[in-house]
Image (tube, rainbow, N blue to C red; front, side):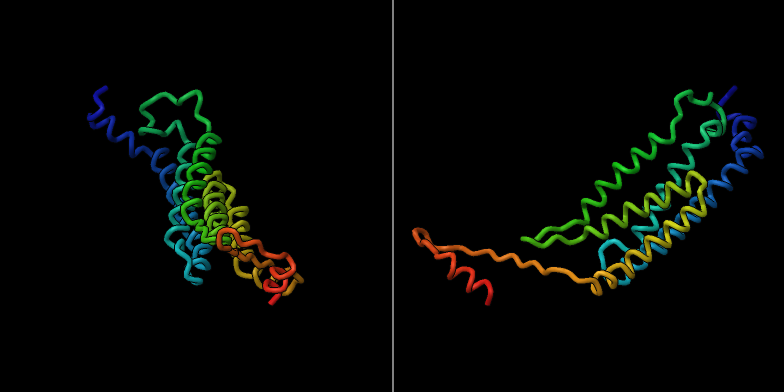
Length: 190
């Protein structure tokens, strides 16, 4: 059969292929909306990764996952279903890729580390997308709500709970100078 024949091209628009595409479309759209919801909090607080980043991560994760679940429809159903089609390998690739993306938002400056929450929430957005891709819609909505609640209200809870402050002091001395510990402690306490 010629790949460009009318019959071959029409098979891309057969009822089962169109129905699968519609299901995939709604999975991707739902994941985008859930990702935008999670990303709103980051964007609202002025972080580098905001609604667009989270929406894209969630949507792409869902797309890759849901597409992996329909190997019989790959290429319009023109190829035999691969015997080793394994969606868990797709998830493994997503998690690895998101790890690199998350590492890009983590900044260190001296003793200060910024971006860990954003990196973790990007990872959560990819998990939401994967969850949508596998068809666990209620779980994805719950994960979205819990992620948003964690990012918005857990910091407020942390402020209410008792904690110990830590201070890091970097001290440089001239060559040959031998400081006394008592003097250093006294200066640090001030």
